[in-house]
Image: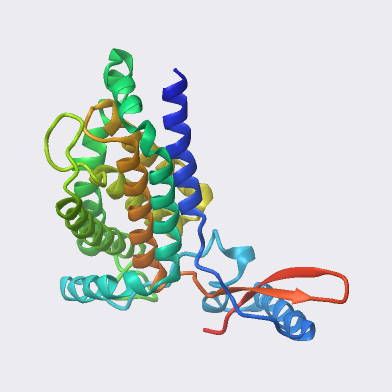
Length: 296
């Protein structure tokens, strides 16, 4: 039971940490009056700004989805997916999240064998987590396609966006996340060539965990973290199920969660809510930090 609790906590903490490693960048030391002006401008925009201006307002962060793309057709899907591959290594958040995921995977590596054996040999654990392989496999392949097709070809376009709507936009981002995620997962698998606990190929990282966390991270940026917690919990469930199914080690799942989150944030972050800066302000006797909007 202790090993089971440890495994679950590690995966949950990993998901929480990566899901909140926001892409904010310190902008150096500035005069406190400049910070006050920036904060005041941000406050004014929260009261009378346009929807576009309010997209970067922390007070409205959860209610404001990422800016919709002009097009969500197949040509745009191919073009933007290629740009996602190029943007992935250029974002600071990518390396922060992968660093956290890699360090955590390394830390739990000594417990890999014991945790997987404990969960996979428990009849109750295997029964509880049995649906996880289907949710993280078929579910993560079907859901993005279904949302995209419904939004693109069934639901009516938005009044102010004749080429798209919120559902085709969401499906558009989910499809891109799954494509990019799967490409990186397979590349790492065939590079590392780690044998699975059941003796098959290949284990590191967990593709199911990566797909589930990529899905969850896209929803988190679209819906806000309060509404996305059920999806994050489901992604944790999927990752843990791979241990009970004797298909992965704990370090596979932890790094897969980090990889999926980094991919999801790359996809949505290229046109989403990333226009914030954390500004340190040093006074005579105090040091404070302010979260301000960066100009669009």
